[in-house]
Image (cartoon, rainbow, N blue to C red; front, side):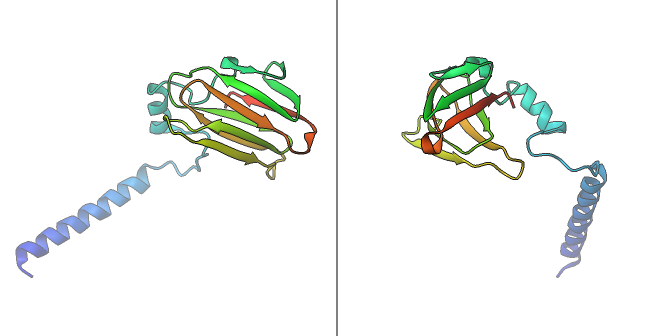
Length: 152
């Protein structure tokens, strides 16, 4: 190996170590939360159109609705107005439920998701919506079900 090649390798190694040290030193040492982007990601999200979730006020329901809480036995049809871009419809419940919705981006697919309560006792479904859509909710066993259309 020539002297020039050694110099290039040493320079690259120094730059790599300096970049790593800078990246570690700039971090605040705090743990992030997946649902709460902060820093640069949060600012970029704000510039890209604000909230990434569907506004509950733009969702119409074919079942009983009090504020953002849906009550039904068996199933409920939701009509989501065009959100003007890719957004996420967030649905929460204390019991298991199933969601069926068209896939976004003009895909000729129907997506089905089964939401099961987690350790916190809450079942959450997140559905991507980029156009006006019909979303179907079902609760297994034909029992009464309540689902909340969440803002986040």
